[in-house]
Length: 202
Image 1 (cartoon, one colour):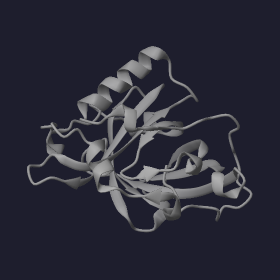
Image 2 (cartoon, helix red, strand yellow):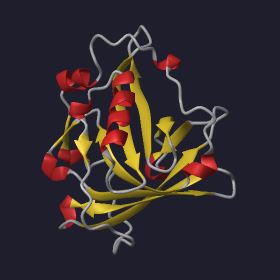
Image 3 (tube, rainbow, N blue to C red):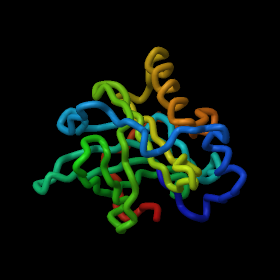
């Protein structure tokens, strides 16, 4: 999930707190899902929780946030996002982004809103049928560890079972992230078509 700039306030101390201060994990040592299979990853995912590199006012959080992954003719992926916008009476929004493949399966590049701001989209772990954990280190420390990161937990269903939550928590911890800093995404009244496709963040 990405939010309107006016709804976000960045505090340097908060950003530092999002990545464990005693973490010695180098970003270049992070493994993605072994033998990642793109065709199994396509389809709809529900955003379950996510980590921002900035503070987000709880009143500014989107709801019913889903992403539909479809393969393009060129092999890359179109993501169609639906959700409810707190700035528009919780009405539905819709927008598209693109994921570009790389030579490393599971390590992809994300072009949010197709505006050209390319970021990493690393599928660290997924079972394809229930959950996915995606990671993006935004800023590196001089020693190769991550100074500021974003991460997402997706589910094929609006909720995750307790055993899958435990597995996800283990993956998050292995990335030196604090799950207590993640924002939960609520799902109560999903959107399929937005009345205004231009009602997007950016």
